Image (cartoon, rainbow, N blue to C red; front, side, top):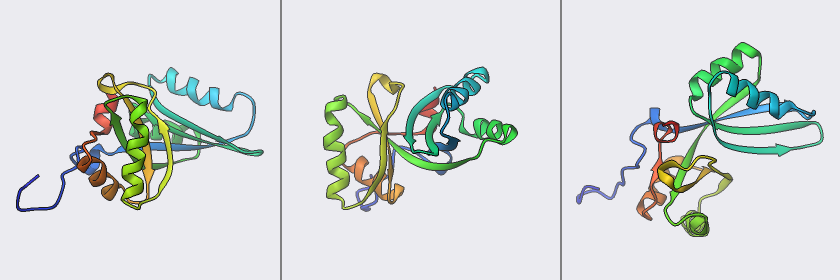
Length: 158
């Protein structure tokens, strides 16, 4: 941080390295999630984070994958409806026990968390969480100022 500026530079260095989540809308039927996971595996993509919200008639699957651009292309080719959202991924140096402190930083900054879920892989050997917040730029500044390392898509996809 420059001593003449109050601006904090996020760890994720530019827009292209933001972590991108793909949200897939599935019919609520047996094997629907497995078919998506199998499709990704067959095409050599890794699921790095996953959240599932099930309802009576449909399921919303949130995925962080190793190559979101290529997976998006695959979904288009296969006719699978999806959308993309940028997220913040925060590393928890002290493990899951630090999650409350991380959430408290967001709360104290008076910004909303729309949803949160764990990252399945352990980047740098540490736990991490994916957060969808009201304003990603503000959320990055808050977490970086509090000493949290925020991870880029490239860091997750290694």
